[in-house]
Length: 334
Image (cartoon, rainbow, N blue to C red; front, side):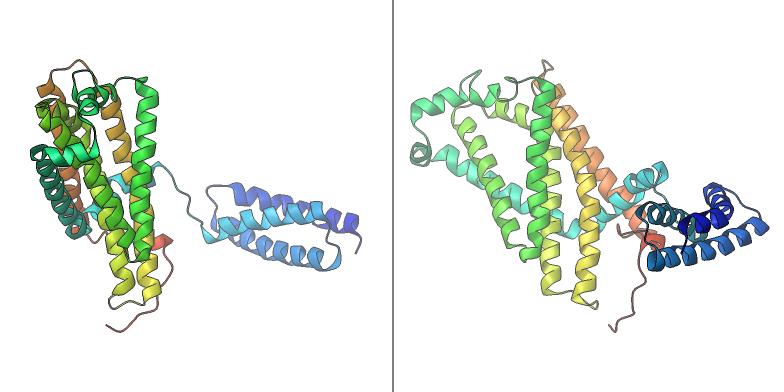
């Protein structure tokens, strides 16, 4: 096949197809013409591939056919509407539907933290087995390590570090769910131990109020995001054990998509928490003001998840892909 003659023969219809494929609105006649030219172009591409696979021409025709296919099939592109819908509908609905997992995780974790903190604060022998008394005094004194942690680095870089660390903990909880959720329990327990020891040590030094003034402004929202991630990880692990009426592959795919979507929302929540930790926690605001900001942020999140999420869930939203973006599923027997 003579490529020069072939290109010269079909150049005008390729150009016309390209022009039609780039238009936003077409008349009925133009739509028919687009479909006809698209079908011809696919035949031209197949002919070139079989007879004269010239790389430059193949690349040109492949791009043209792909663009025309998108115009013919009406491919959907994401935009700001999808972002707004995610935060207003999909994310809160997914939070609400998963509440039976992350709310118990939150309650159990907080109770375990309180118990561990009490044990640490009231048993000197336990404290001494973990840290020497002089080191404890250095950590808990005014301006010591616990307080300096929040103010010894530039706020912007500290916020980025905090977000990265917390996001990694959340990601571990989400990903470890596939291993029956068992590693999630370890991650959550590690979080409980670190928090309980910190509270217990500061309480033993009589500076619990200072510690809570540093923790609450950002910690309520931060811990809630971690609890949500832990709950989702455990739910994914349980899906492996009991997929319900769906096939195990279908159930895991659905939960996996929800988790991927939730990870975006949780990253946003943790970013807000990181900003609070970097700019509010070490600020010169009175303790009551800093704590109030943290409480307001937590209340706002709970209203978002449980009130807005309930409304979205009742409308049928599950936090999965839109119906237009989802593959058709074969019905299964219950």
